Length: 530
Image (cartoon, rainbow, N blue to C red; front, side, top):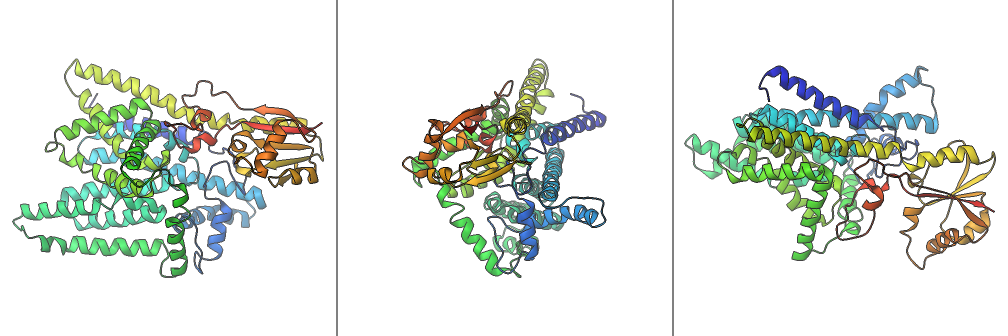
């Protein structure tokens, strides 16, 4: 591994280029304008609603207004071009364009996050470690998925990575500028997605402790002057002001309070997976490890875990690197173990931190003497080769989603004027552009009343219907061939070379991974009247 600047720049360009290609592949997956196949994606209709109320007058959502405002700003060039006649689109067609713009925002922020991880390694004195860490993060499955959707996971990860850069800098020099920028970027992360608060609960005391050590080295051992140090006081005030502004607290206090009630109640408690006792917390910890292994891919996760262990084995020597663990531990302890549930996307900030240790571990190995250097190089090639296929598996699944095949079948086989009825949420089903369609309520009586020519069902969603309900009765009747309908099409694309099988992700079991990737490539069934 060369230490030359040209070699490092070329390697970083390769990582960034590969990341952009992976993230842009499948960028238009399932866009329908008024909805999309990506769960919880911020859509133009939601942004427009917030903007019409100026994110005030009681406006609130599950998420704060900051990224809605970012998306509104990103939409503006398209809307200006439309006013000048350069873009000719209305209704759902316009929304589809705007939704694509929202996804491009995520892609850009994801690319900047990869660059920031590389910059973090350089800031810590090991540029190659940063480049390798950037590759680890860029090739993780949920990172590739959320880099192409307008969810909040990539945006808040970007702000976290930026805050981590200023965190490292302030620990090195304790300059006021770095304290202020750390506070502002941390506030932006929390304003983007509230769960980011967990990254800073223990990080702030760590900053205070580091400042105290810094002051003690200068001869002042008193604690009170540390706590009242202008760097802490002004940065805390600035962070609070930024958070208040980005959450629009001053002009929308009732909306802000309503938002807090939502995230503390219906957006949290119903999703709880584990009891608040010792066995429950241990089970959540095991699930978190499973999610990390799934998110990064098992080989990459093991390398990153080995790097973390190696750094912990020599704490004095690696103190600057070990400070990176504080936000990750803080997040797991004060967010995951408070809400008591988790998904693969929840561990993305932890993946980012572990990636830095994985990069440090491989870079150190490849600077060692043979045969260790050779072993490290072989390991790096093997792990990144697997990770590249693993990351590309996400894109392969998206671009071969079964719903595309069903859409083609419908366009060929449904005669003009025939009524296609859908059961279940539209975001779980193929799009029905150009077809006469209608959503049905989940009951047998509704089906018999409307008597559509075709009925379309997501079989994976149907399997979750509760026994004894009208919805369950309806699905059972359709699949049994009753009420004059027969199965005309059952479609699920085989995973092929993909290292990820969405069907297996959705199966119940003690080792289940909770991921929105289980909603990719669902089994779609189309029933036709006999």
